[in-house]
Length: 136
Image: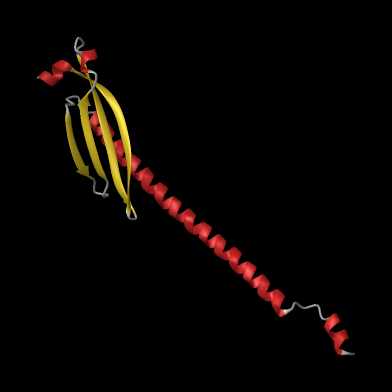
């Protein structure tokens, strides 16, 4: 058998083909790992968003349960590190002056850190309060 016959009969890959295949595989694996990393960051970010929403919702329920709601502004920091700016104000007093109720608006903004960025959500709702309860 000659050298040419041996080369034709061997069914192996050349070194160049193996290197190209390895390079393509390496690029594909790197891309897939980066996608997993981005997904993990998104999951973490959405978890913080959900926690902030739950904290704000719970605090908003506490404020709405107060029958003696009055005009005020204050800031709170939760045990979990969320900062809440809360403002209660009377809205449309000219429309409620002849009524037995006042319309109060509650603005609650919750802030939290996500890495080096500060994120926030703002919730707003309204509640009617009896005027005679406020005057007592």
